[in-house]
Length: 217
Image (cartoon, rainbow, N blue to C red; front, side, top):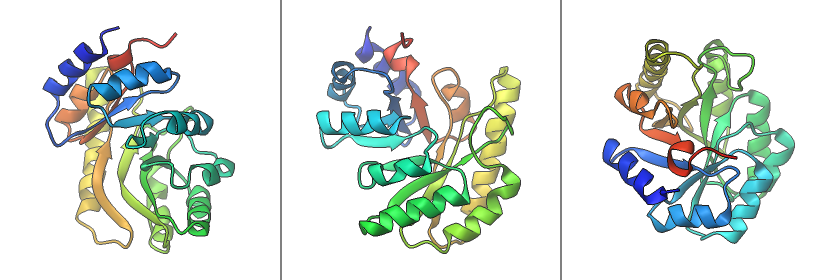
């Protein structure tokens, strides 16, 4: 496994202003440390327990991103443990994040996850429900939205491009509106097999696991 070689390839392909997240779910501490030693500081996890364990064992300057479905009963465990929650997908989850972070007087930085393909197998809010969520976000004191995230449906380059462009259009529209507690700093889209296309469509944050660490066993 040539982590350094993989990272060098990806680094040469992405602009300097793109945030690069190494998806480290199911990877060992030693493997994550290899990526860290190569200069990676942003890592993504999709299980709360795994994130908490790794955050205790690994360097404290790592910025942990929660990229999986976040259950409301697990929110309290990640207060002040994550740099960015990338999977806000409902008003109920928003309320729980606000409640738990308020208890510790901490601010949660989050991305709204959009289910751009309306897939039943994926999490994320539908676009027609986005405005109602925004109204509730503006009432919060301990939640700050920093942008959008999506996982697009599997398909060919043409269909992938259409979903990425649709996400970019939504991000652009929101960028030109004024909100309380909402800014469009990040558009998190693109993974190991499609990040190059996502970047062409305007992504400024990519999430790559297999492209760094190889296939998970």
